[in-house]
Amino acid sequence: MSSVYEKYHLKQVINASGRMTILGVSTPAPEVVESVSYGLNHYFEMKDLVNHTGDYIAGLLQAESAVVVSCASAGIAQCVAGVIVKDNAWLLDNLHAAPLTVPHEIVVPKGHNVNYGAPVGTMVALGGGRLVEAGYSNECSAAQLAAAITPATAALLYVKSHHCVQKSHLSVAQAAEVAQQHGIPLIVDAAAEEDLRCYYQMGADLVIYSGAKAIEGPSSGLVVGRSRCVEWVKRQSNGIGRAMKVGKEGILGLTQAIERYLSQPKTSGSEMVQHMTPFIDQLNQLPGVTARVVWDSAGRDIARTEIHFDEALTGWATGDLVQALKNGDIAIYFRGYKANESIIEADVRSVTAAQLQTIFSRIDALLAERNNA
Ligand SMILES: *Cc1c(COP(=O)(O)O)cnc(C)c1O
Image 1 (cartoon, protein in one colour):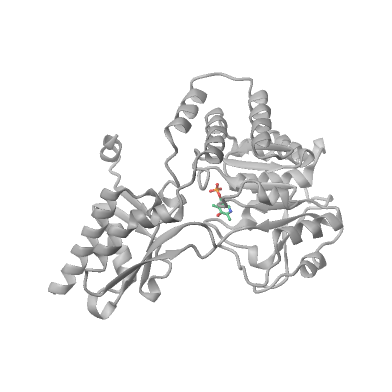
Image 2 (cartoon, protein in one colour):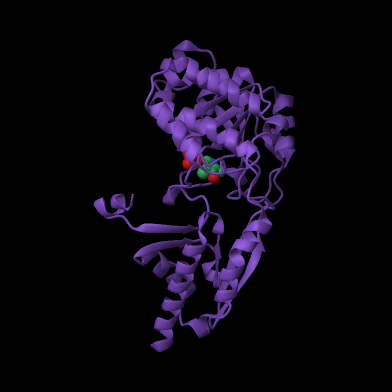
């Protein structure tokens, strides 16, 4: 449907940057699109749709309970609201109406108080919580996390993400132990993580995933957890959850995407290497360009192409080159956060062989511009 690009004056995009919200995250498989379409075309008793798909997902993940939400951010806000409001009917209707007298502090390791595109703290505040940081920006042990707990604490929040400080921070299992010792729930934001079971198995009470990232579903989110806590989250659909409602199409689409994600063999790192090798060989023939395979720094089985530019030879500041690639007729997006070290990375999982050729031609052309100057 290239007409959509024409009709709204949009640029075509080659996404060599991975699952990026600013580019539309992912492109779900046909069977997921079919489920979305089925959802849009039928009526359901919505309460049953929510409960029965949740039970189905929980069965797949060997967890007590689950519920589909509109995105991971909504999951954080509703989990926070859930652990504060619990079964209190008055609070459900009046979460933000008056200062809270029930426990509403959410303790988070300081190195997990990140901005993933929006601040974690904003979602906590939406849910009526007050963020309390534990430890320091470069360290948070189990003891430091425990030290921040008071009678006003409603829950612990652990953000499992490459965005967070990894150094000298406690593990999810350690956080779960602290939560259990203090009789409070542990919420884990695992939005972009690939393992849909392990954090629950480590003892988290509520685990949140983004539906469109690793799972490659439609815009949606997943909350998996203990029944009692998930029931609290579900109740929020009559509270703050109404402002972040997920549609029937999102519920059915994500449920299908989860089933597919668990059964489909994943593209292995070595397959990615095979896919990118001709691209790397081509790049290495350009003056001032060195390309090689690098492996995911978080230890996942993901290989990427690292491209190093000798700026003296290319005549380009690497940051400007990254920008020029975005500005072309076809917008090409790389992982550019190492541009200040003259390095860019390509995540080739969503890039076809033909698109790799387009990327190569574009880099070749941009470098040639400067060589002639
Ligand atoms: C992407 C992300 C989110 C938000 O996910 P959405 O589904 O876009 O709301 C939250 N936390 C972390 C760590 C993320 O990476």
